[in-house]
Image (cartoon, rainbow, N blue to C red; front, side):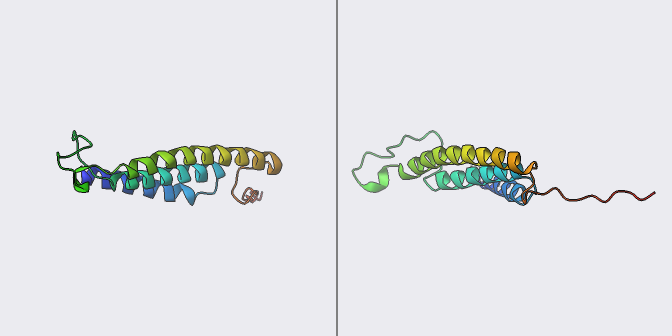
Length: 117
């Protein structure tokens, strides 16, 4: 289970970083979203990876026998914040495209030279 989670986090991180480095603003927004999903999976995995186990692991009153709810709360909060941030990025993206007429990161399309006759 740990290997699958590690590979998933690695693939999401690599794809997110690759998309962040692209020249179009929509690709940058998607890259940021993928990177935030990778971080959320990492934080969620820090809790404990047990399949089919109850949240209370034993009958004892000690703190070790109870599963930690903090990573789940952090991920839930991060999902809500990343959704709002993505919506804000898309609104800014549409406004910038309306002003500049381009969705390129620096606001200008790369100039292509016309072929000579």
